[in-house]
Amino acid sequence: MGESGAGQPGVGRVLVVIPTYDEADNVADVVARVRRAAPAVDVLVADDNSPDGTGVLADAMAATDGQVHVLHRPGKEGLGAAYLAGFGWARQRGYDVVVEMDADGSHAPEDLPALLAAARDADVVIGSRWVGGARVVNWPWRRLVLSRCGNLYARVALGMPVSDATGGFRVYRLSALRAMRLESVCSQGYSFQVELSRLAHRAGVRIVEVPITFVERERGSSKMSPLIVAEALWRITTWGLRDRRPGRWRRGHDRWP
Image (tube, rainbow, N blue to C red):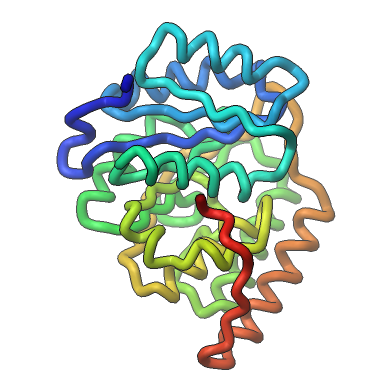
């Protein structure tokens, strides 16, 4: 089948899910670095029909490496939908652990072994920018302030002991994802990571944070926009109010196949 057999020692079979949309300048380098940093893991590029040919590049990598796979999606549906599709792909193929990682190079694949080591004793591992030992490189001060304040607001509003609820470099055990009621997920982009942090906290799974080095992308354009930030603030406020009313969970359609 092409997937790795023995998996990562102490963790099991690992799938790194990398969503892409117009990341032709970055995807090959990121996948190659993942394969060097953690040779036992498999990689799934979940491409949203990128006009710049990202999916074609991913197919070429998969053709020469049995541990690289590609999930072609019909169009741009957002980060959250791509990750949920990747989680479902992993579940259907018997993986034990999935990893979220950006395609733009901001998440250093060289940090992946430390996150996987932490997963031996945790259900969810967050690669954190805001714990001791972490570094953020080449971010403008406005982004630093936005991230710091946004994470502080999420921590207070949702009562979560998580320093980087918006961080997108993560490790999830499939057993944790099953406990997190992913059928209720309703957000995309910036707020998707906050929502999964909230669901993990509410499910009572073991969450740990590991310091990472976060680097601003060098090639391509950021997908961040004021609308994405506004959505995140609105959703965090709504969740915070809802969570103060025990038993009131709004259920959505099942988006985790």
